[in-house]
Length: 360
Image (tube, rainbow, N blue to C red; front, side, top):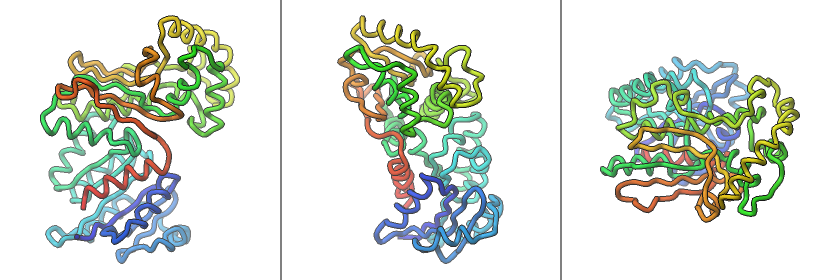
């Protein structure tokens, strides 16, 4: 097998775990040549050893320069000689995402869990697609939707083999999965909404400001990514996730609260309205779940709180912060269901590594 030179950007929780998994691959055809954090970068065309990367990065005084990294990797990417390069973006950076076309045009693959390049303006998505074709390179982002769950790849395989997607429906946020698994159970009873959100934050499931999760924007980004893999919906969301119909869970009056702690202090005042929603669902023999829906025939993409029968998989199969997604297509008249851990450094890094393995 030919050598694939790997440049990793982002050394946070996912980045560190990814590098650990990458350097543990037996008989690897991967050569780690660059590691970059938000403050500095280290490059070695001869490769970086597992025991050295953190020390070398810490000692480096060189700041990350995307154009410079492109030049370095281009030298290592001679077409026809069996060696290529890939940039693994483990950040959530808009600036890096907008640079993807430059890497791709130069024949450098891009693998990422960063949703920004896939869920923003349609124009960027189109630039990425065109650049990948021009450079004969690939852009892979399985981990952008379900961490290590095979969601993007499953959808691409369905579309690529000629199946027609009818509807996609799923619990796509690990945070909101946990919150409603705890708050809305088949028994119809449970703790207050505000207390569940507080516990979720203490467990590290939410963002520092819980409203960032309750807004539904993360689900909207994932829906955008999935919809853009369905040809008939490519132009439906011209402005990306902001074009999605999102029914936010942030109470009216708390939208402008800047501090996460202040938000949690004020949230109990709205517990009654959430209790009412839970009671109404229970009377109907249902539970509440925050889901993402892609209705292909009616061209509807929505993220909202919905009710499901207590016998539905979204009520009976979920636990903790699991994700679950159901694909209904012409072939899968009974939905194909993918379920499992949809968040966490280990599974996200594994999803990124699985994309990397598709390149060799």
